[in-house]
Length: 229
Image 1 (cartoon, helix red, strand yellow):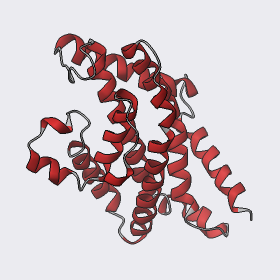
Image 2 (spheres, one colour):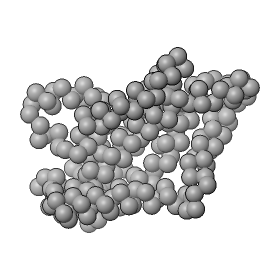
Image 3 (tube, helix red, strand yellow):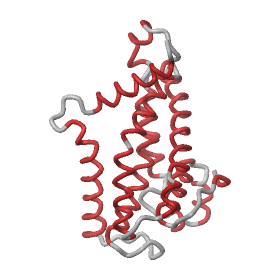
């Protein structure tokens, strides 16, 4: 069987099953990030008057937009890994009846998650455009930060999906580890606001690079620095 064709079918099936049975269906893929960004803007920009830093701007929507960018990237990674951990055990009948490379299962989860995240990225660009009142030339470099993230997520997903076959409790442990990693990533805070010793420790977290480089491209017109990875 053609592996590319099978992978394509797996990705389509996974995407179609995300909102199956819901009244609004595919609209939720656009409504969820929109509602989330709205809540962040009202809560952090309105109630708490949170500001990310003067280097970006003092607009009350700035903090919510920068925060949303970190959450968007982290969700691509965490959801890919979370869904992939139990993907082989969750498709035992499929695995036994069809002869194919098992690597396609975690890869399909990563690709479907990445495709579903395009609506989040589109909303992020719109919000950034509102903040800066124009589009930035550096935004065309976003794929150079997103593709490495997808590849990294796929690599970790291969590892956890293989371990998940032998350790069935891994899916619960992964959830806890992903939650810990979330707070060890500069999603809600500026990396530069931390003491130097903490910044050195966090450099071991690969998500720090993905989030910081993405924000540099989005908000500071910087080129991706692969040497820091």
